[in-house]
Length: 245
Image (cartoon, rainbow, N blue to C red; front, side, top):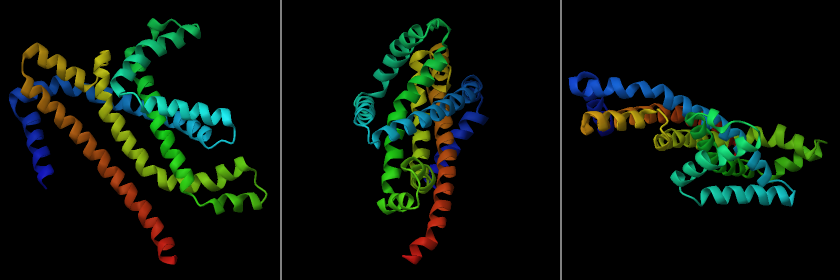
């Protein structure tokens, strides 16, 4: 209840108070940019995380070690230095090796790629944990039916693992949304950069950052509500099985 009152107060200031409304008009145009950047980074990190997870559980020693090294390296470095390193060093270098003009890669895409590479490591562990949460007997049952190891993973293990990984994947989506604010250091035009620019030009720091906080907390609450509904549905689907056991 207290949180609702706080958000309502911030919203009233942002939308119905003249000085705050001016800040809102200047900052809110970046909401679409923030959501797009978050969605793109999340989709790419899902694909990357799945590949890394498959590497982590692979019988191939080389693939396992490469995936493990990647994950531990990414998780061992703070996000902000990684964003600088990936967006300003790795992306231009790789683009050059591939024959592209790195100047043609926008700051938005550099930021998206950086976030995707970073969160791919975290999502890989989510997928790995989900796969390993499925009882080993399910794999043995699939193999006993004549399925290959790959087919067993795809048809038996993954469908069951998805029930376990969807909630933490939702949390990672929210985390990417919040960490997209760090892309303001690359001059990516999301809401944090617009708030900083408005504050620097008008010296209305209170108005700028009240509006910014309202935008982020509103987006996070909406996503958290949606995630909560998904989790309740998943728990509801599990109830008959739990009652049976």
